[in-house]
Image (cartoon, rainbow, N blue to C red; front, side, top):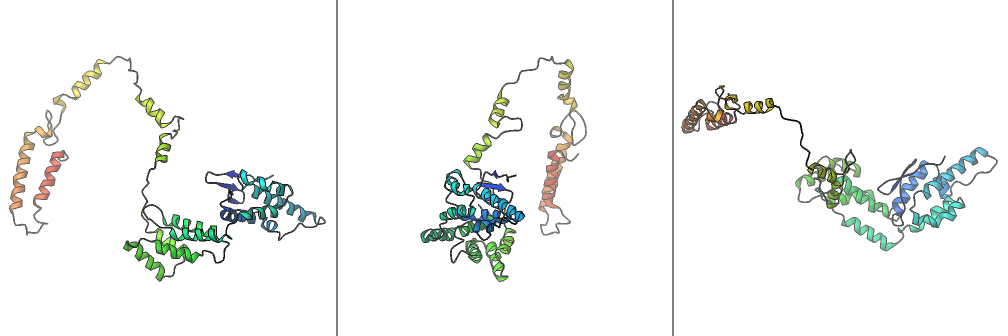
Length: 326
């Protein structure tokens, strides 16, 4: 039964042997890397390179295994191409020659073009790191993407080159980042250890809503199958009034609940008035203000633990105003 492939939104195929980037003519380096890993997992890479030739028919079991792995190699390679690049290798696929298919695709490898290599290296050096817009992991991934594009040249962009570029890109005006940079250099940390160490001091990046995201949120589907816009329109529609007659008891209960006799003062605990109209509350409030004034006139150099001062009484007065003290 042939393996099944599922295309993802980011341009990959999820195969039985791993994720493979779909070849579009301009991404040969990453395609070759991911496809090679899948072929290795399927034990078909040696057939693609020609290192393993077809065995003799006398050994039926070995021959059958080789033929199955050759079919798998053809399936992996052909399923990793966009339609425009599938036609040039169709005759090679019909001839069941995965090595010729791979060699044909390798013509798109631009690592032998000196101008292209210089452009990639220039883009690598031009990369900058902004901790408010990207993470350390994202920045290193961008550096690695340039490294992959010219992985077959001599000399390539090495892991030490990526590490040096990371140190150069850390914010020079930020003492925190520079202190961590010096720590990594003093302890001679490699790239992976440096990334793990720097990730500990990263601050959360604020989510910036762009115009596409706003448009997407406007048409976001809810679980009930309606979009947000339609749901808002539905909510704005006037609702029909209920024809159920009001009961006399409900109106009378509302009138009783708002009558002055139902009010209760939080200060004196008596009914018939609220706290702001309570005479006892007003008297206590005046006494607190007078006491506050007396305390402020006392010697300010006294022990604050013995004399609580005006701040204490001001806070107490505010609690009375809020009705939290009774």
